[in-house]
Length: 370
Image (cartoon, rainbow, N blue to C red; front, side, top):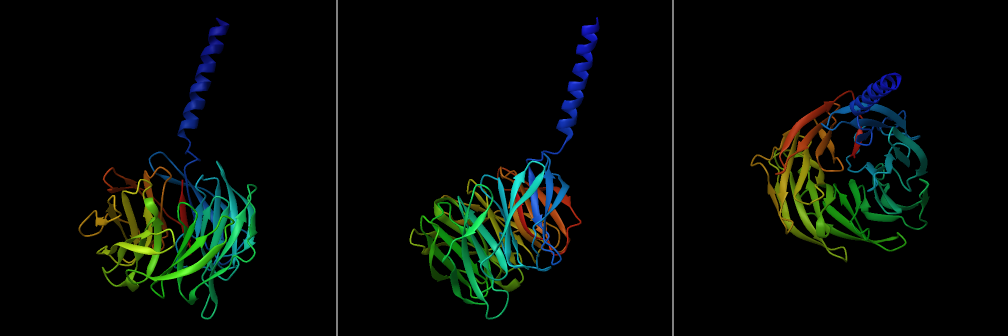
């Protein structure tokens, strides 16, 4: 009889433990955003439930400072492809910080000078990281600078890797590796140009090749299959006048237009993302508080998912956007309402709202998810 009682009690304890564990948010699924605070930059960590709901789960100081205002950028905070490392710019102190991603949060492993002034965007491929420095003012040099990355979470500057952009005060928005890590792309908002750089096996960039954008004010971009690049165009905030363009990126760095300036019918399209299967692209419309979705065909051609260009309504001033690692959810950082909104992505690219979390600082910048 005693053994039956012991077994019965053990079964109850096991069941309660199982219920308790299942009731906890899955810490392996998370969303990250940087505060970009001038008094001290931090990364905010939100755990994500299976339904897409976000729960604040911690704040982790970068050791550097932000600017306290907008950066006009994309990819100021990124995750490595394996989700094990997080990189974030400290635009106010001209640094980049590295975090190890852990189930319960983040651990700061390094902080280095960015190789220029006002870093706004980073990109990472295997063991090489490049930083885009926006210059921080008229006459200051806009550049990209490379770093080697160790498995222990340390960055080492690649001596002689700094490369200038097309000029000064170009308003650079994003730097990004192609999927092979053999090319880099940089968008310049002020000049309506797109720069490409070749990257050798040691991580050193050559170039740039400077090319005109299809539309006005190229901003954020995302890479698709076959080295296709999808670039948002803000058109200076012209009402209902922004667009998304697609290009073929050739092996020599030349850009070949596929779909030039396909309009969003919304205002100030700035941040761009693409599903892993390459079927759908989305941009955040900062001036319209909306997300515009596009279908992408096998040739990389774009078509609006909705005739009016409004796939979803966000909080005011959506800036950055990010997919969960399985593309099940799309999140937007909304600078005007100081919120993050989450949407479930349907089989045909449709978006349905699932979550919203508030209380973010007005200076928040950069969004990554897993």
